[in-house]
Amino acid sequence: MKSPAGDTPSPQELIGQVPEFAGLARSATLLRPSAGAPGPHDSSVGGPFLWPSADPWPVCRAPRLVRRREKLSDRDRELWQEADRRTKERRQARGGGAYEVTEEDARTQERIMAGAGALDMVTWERIRTVSEPHDTPPPLIPVLQLFSRDVPGLPFPPGTDLLQLMWCPDDHAEPPGQPRYWGPDAGIMFRSSAAAGTDRILEPPRPDEAKDGYVPAPCVLDPLGAVDLPEEDELPEELAETALTWAEDHGADYARTLGCLPGWKAGGWPSWHLTDFVPLDCACGARMRLHLTLDSGGDPGLNVGRFGELRVFVCPSDITHPLRLNIQ
Image 1 (cartoon, rainbow, N blue to C red):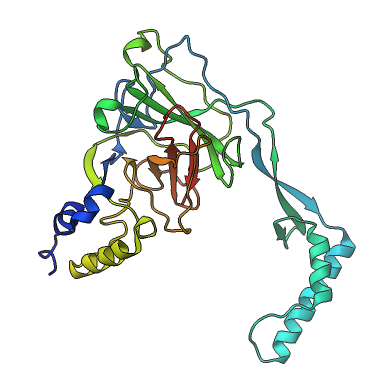
Image 2: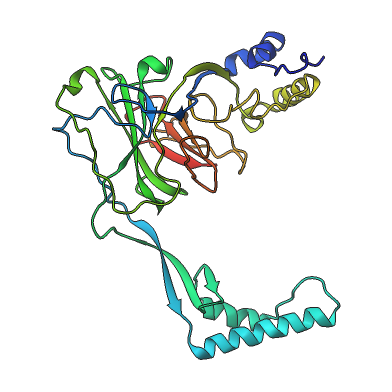
């Protein structure tokens, strides 16, 4: 039976008809950022932080990714062009189809590339991406501020009611504690808003350079509580089949409608729409849990991971354990 025209089936409907899903439901808060002028006492994206002037402003000390260009010798450029010409001639002789590179030409091109990731065939330069320290550690930029009053159910350490997420607006490859991660190096801080005092930093320092899409435009939030269910990959096989069938019968897709809701989100379940399920475990052995989802596009104007989502995972046993970052 399909939902009435224009209505989207809800997780609560599925749970009501299939009680086995009740134990898998997680509370989430959809943050719904929109362009605005938030103040330091507001939950916001890209807005001013409630930051005591006595606290030093954090800087990035992790190596960043930079692109280095290396000019090919005239002889290597000629060898590459000759191999390229032979490949095209073979394709033309066959009347089209796939390009085929001989083992000899492949070895020549591999030697010329010398491990570089790309070749600029206009300037004839190899382009290599390497990790290098900043000349001067740049200040981190404010990305997300959340007061606990706006995200009920989201865990906070005892004695705190304010979460602040900052990052270095540059790409990093596997920064400290973040294996298999490529993106802005981010961190969160919890504090007591009451202890922040009245002597505060109004204009935080800004880095001289920032990668496009890593500096959010100021946005106010319109938090909305929601029920979130896990993605198909995190469901038992029988329940996964039930979820997909139920959603189809009600005129919807399960993923991103009932499970792992999209957009800026606090809590809930993560989507694994670009990869298979990737379990993230804390050093203490606990399976980590999704804490925050930061989305690309919309009014904040971010672009992470080729217009994807940056997710922050925390330890459910102790939220002060080191966080894990993941981009989908």
